Length: 89
Image 1: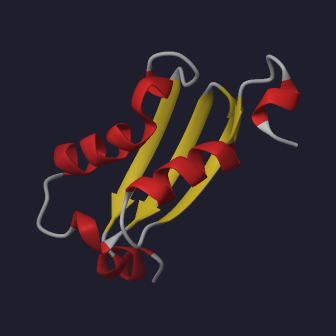
Image 2: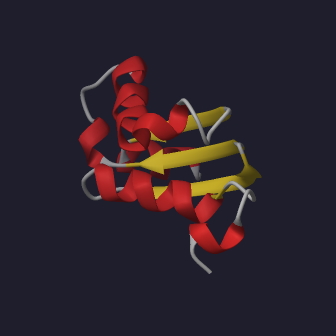
């Protein structure tokens, strides 16, 4: 089912995941939630050497205008692959 078939059901976690993964190189996004509230864990080497604020801005850029209309709240944690491996220990 595509977004147009859902009417006013809002975005899905898969919609958000797809936009993030399309916009950030070699990214793995794990997104939960529905409607307009989401939580994401995002892993990408593109985050290496960047401060958390810069990483979050990269994610917001992938979502564009959806952050002002379709998404009310997005809680996120960003990781490099090395940080993710350590967090999983």
